[in-house]
Length: 316
Image (cartoon, rainbow, N blue to C red; front, top):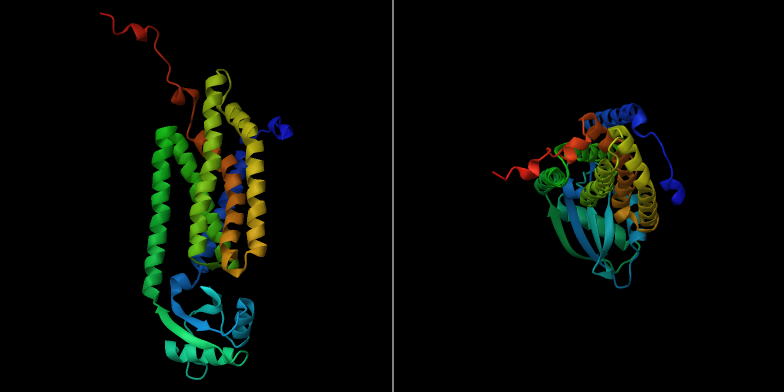
């Protein structure tokens, strides 16, 4: 990685092009979020949760395929405690003839009959209903969690560095969250609680990269007395580039393994992190530093100039 450390690239010289790219992505994301919205999962929309017991180990994949073939969409099927118990979560369903919503008992009985065609030992253990009101509360609480996280980061970066750095970090985080949510809206990938958790993880990942760059910028301001702000930022990004590349690469290896091998339940979580890591790496280089530069950060803001003879002020 010594090659990466020796790279001297004018990152700030391309900040206007990066700004155009970011604005286009944000506008597309906003447009999709407004017109199409997010494809909220059962955690937010509500639905019926049922647990079915089998005499022998049941295949989650086979049960899901059988029910989907019978016309039940957007199912969440997983083991419940043991391999013989299956938990099935299904969104509100409607009667094909009358168009009226099916109540929990009728829906669960129909699904049970469908599973008994393959395995007669299937028995219904319990049925619960998750109302939409719970989903609305989750949306509100999740939004507040994101807001509190951003406010906490704003305070932390301001105390540790300087207010211009804090605004740069927040700009990068908001940029990452909007674009990641926009990707989910454009492709209509299911948005559930695991994806919300992934968005919070993206904030932490992006901030970590940004803090590393900011820390190096502060160090280089102290070393390079004659260097311009752009030169200091370019040098700092180049010096941390190897660390950024290694961290992103190893993280992506794990995320791709989770996405392809982790199963349907964790796909949304892994996909959100994959998108977030890519966008977060980009924003820590171009968005955070560019915003800080645009706000007029300089060496004097981090290292106050001492007055000549200030150490003698206490002498009468």
